Length: 583
Image 1: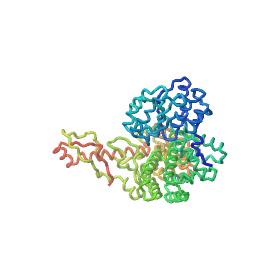
Image 2 (image 1 turned 45 degrees about the vertical axis):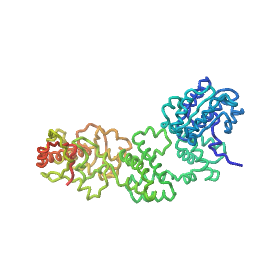
Image 3 (image 1 turned 45 degrees about the horizontal axis):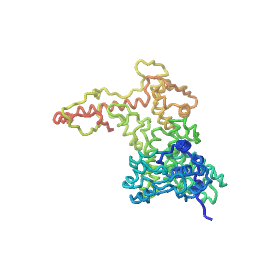
Image 4 (image 1 turned 90 degrees about the vertical axis):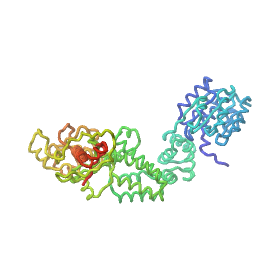
């Protein structure tokens, strides 16, 4: 006895059995019930969403012996013949194999003849975009004014390739990709009817891998039933698809959060033991990074989805929003590059090392009180965390952020001069080298001076932040704070009100816990958001960067060689092209 695949066995027989596409079914049902069906219909959409199926149901609705309606009986001779593919008045044409104009002319020669047994002669042309230009030209006139007994049903996955002359003669219906829940519901229904054991994890994997196509989902289900010897369970489906459990993906993400290369390769080894498809692993990582970003920026969305919220919240605090965006982009680029690697695992490991090698912005520590060279351009503010930089060794890092000795000009670079006429020299930069002073930790002039505040001036808040174990947005929260009172008993912190968006109760608790652990459990830590005049480490860093930029511009503008070139060639200098560099 021959086996009938699920995609054919469970092909819908009427509109009520079609999954999704309600926006199209409603229009067609009303048109059939009121006898106002257009003579040429075009169905578009990706593979396996129901284009041909809906066209065949339409053919049954038009030729059912019980009369024209949106609910064909499915039991009369016409309905059964259409289901079995032997109805003489339903002419199905595969345009991919009938592309020549002679094939189209032969088809149209029979249009004038009345149907043999039904009310309408229905022409179903699948993949119609494959027809040649000459074939389209031959079809145009008949498509616009066919005989009353003819209906044209066209289907295509690529409507952009159809001539506008054809599109204008058809009523177009765009079938949408099915979502995961719609596909999963149909799989559940089929498995219950077929009395096949399954679990929820397997169905989630199959529905996701179907990628919006019901036919693909049913084909994968057929494969899973065969692979599992009549049962559909998550472990078997993962092996079949080459995917791995979420816990392996979580281990990879956590090793990145902890900046632990050893743990990263242990996680890769554990994942590789499952013989995964590393392209599927990248897809899983993209999904997890997406959910981590949602937790940070759109937490209300997470409430509507069945996700491991506790793990996502705990892990998202270890990353900044910019880091997650960078990692997501690295994974996307890695999907493109992975097939080019000598070995898929080697390519995947290199991609993970790339994530480990790049961070967003330098870490603030006691030694890093000077600004990053390219943090601003032309005096304009920019967040330090926006520019990706390569990790540096401690020696390199200290050298990169060391201030020049007093009275010495920093080394500078400038882009090639523009030879513009007439000469225009920017006069925006007026800061002199002797006007730039080392940053003072003392409170601004006019601020009340108490014994507690004097103790603040003698303490290194930026250095304390650098020694804490917090990362991600919690660390950013600390960088946008400054101590107002700091003594042996209490630490009162003021947060920059402009950075209120990164505040959350969970991050406040994590920061307070880390501070008390560092300073001693007897120190009472409190935080409030205020328009404080006290300079935070982040603001200090931005100010220092602006001052270095101004000094670099002044150095270029006063250089005798540059001045000579301006005079001789009539050149102008763009301040935005000047970058300070460290000694």
